[in-house]
Image (tube, rainbow, N blue to C red):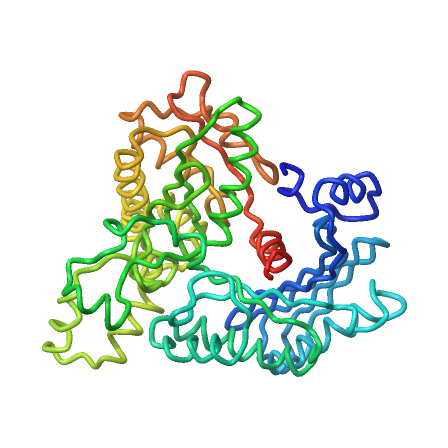
Length: 426
């Protein structure tokens, strides 16, 4: 099972044989799509071998002359980047990728009909928290809970509907971000609100970044197995434009920093994170409109809101190092938030075998990893400074030899997890 944790680009016959022997079943061509408000990402796999044939990325969807299209064919090594493109919406971006995918010179298939399933990274749908076919009922659930994830669900609904027009014969599967967190026990899901609100409206801790944390759990299962562990306790820190901390026990999520929406938990690039709900009513009483308050919480908050510099951690760090006090405060708040959740989950788990950093900041920011681990020294966590500063691109142990917990940097791979769940879906 461990081999499943790696994408296998190119034509590697031995891996195909091993997977066929281990898992059986028919090969299936699966397209994975990850849609953002102004971006589209694609990966095209053959399953169950996890063989990556091609991938594409569209930046600045909605631009008339500044969009960027990236494409890579892993079979013959073709790689292209087209700048200054007019890609007005998802329809144009999807059409462009499918043209490259089927073109005789750049493609890996001759007809889009060869795509049997399309797996979408999806956020949430009322009453649908796992892996579901994207039929009308599931899509309606996404519309019903649009208020909880207005930007994300709007993007996914639009991309799914557009992709369905292009691939009418394929089965569409949604791998919801909430799926991995369904194992969180009730005492950690419930808020201190009237129980009827849970029964009538589904108010509860749902959690997100499930594809990322689930991939980390898969990787840790393999690592723990090699180390002879029968079980393990881990904390996964997904730190990027959006951030969350997840407690994992023996491959299952048992707690997460996210609540019911994506606004909660650790502060994000632009979003507020945890906040006293009464602040909203207070600001209204001070004369602010609801629109102004929501914009402050969702778009002008987080690292950007505190620092006034940028929503990108690296620029905030640079400003802090140059003496900008607000930037320094933003970093301090960010690190303190992360440490708060790690400490809480450490106690809930009764100890810790692995601490993992992943996603954009987690994988690439040595200063943030160092600052977090320094605050965790009281828990017996110690870094190998050289390993922390030099790691990049691969699974790397960055803890010192005498650290009580193994600290790792593991590059996340959400798409491969989505491809697996899409293939497994009955």
